[in-house]
Length: 317
Image 1 (cartoon, rainbow, N blue to C red):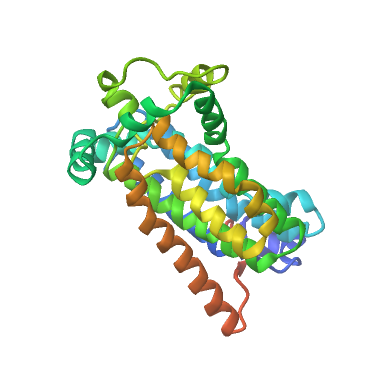
Image 2: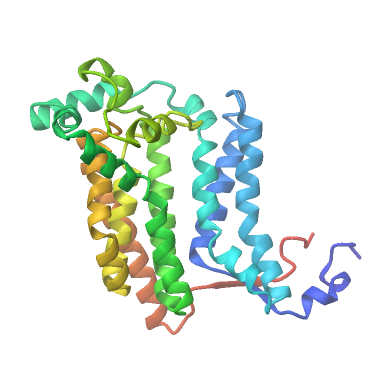
């Protein structure tokens, strides 16, 4: 008998089954695919192995956490971490993308995006808006820009604490789909944005009264900066606003103006081309539509939004 069989783990086996939610399946599949690519066809790219290890850890997260949750169901900390595992995945995976981009699309697409913007609008929208925004307003907009993860986390916590399980699961599923598609687009269409590619078109550094220079400098420190197309900040904000309007009007009205400021800041802060904002709209619609369809399908069939698997599945030979 294998030392890792379920018979050798009676203290786990008695707890029943691990229940993976749809967002868990997205995390496991997408991160596993990234890890396999980095140890396979993309293994020659600089930093491929460390990134592969990172993606593998992110992929194992839901399996390990849901197993622990099934083993100790009364430990609310385990449930909390398992349910919010998408947050560290989004943050960490972003910093692991460089080797994939180097291997798959090593050439920047800024020239094509800037040309498309000229053809659509007749000018560079970020240049026009950045020059028109006064320094005091730029400070406000930059503060709004840094609320990118705050609002999604706030809505998630609100739904979670009020035990709106179905709403919480659908919201997390929509975010999971959105970031999976968005990060895939970063790999296929890497771009650094107008703040770097069109630097000569601006009269000087981004101007503010108090916080703008500091906040702008922080955006130059991430490991991965080829994340311009489509605008993740805009898409995530629109997605949170949509779900807040459906499930928590208090969160919706609280974040509406800061959310609008965040979207404007993507242009005034020179982070994105206007075409990045246009391109993200179908991604938002796809993410919300798919999450709603899956949620309603499960509800009509009388299923839960989770998938069961034997609790010893990750250790079974």
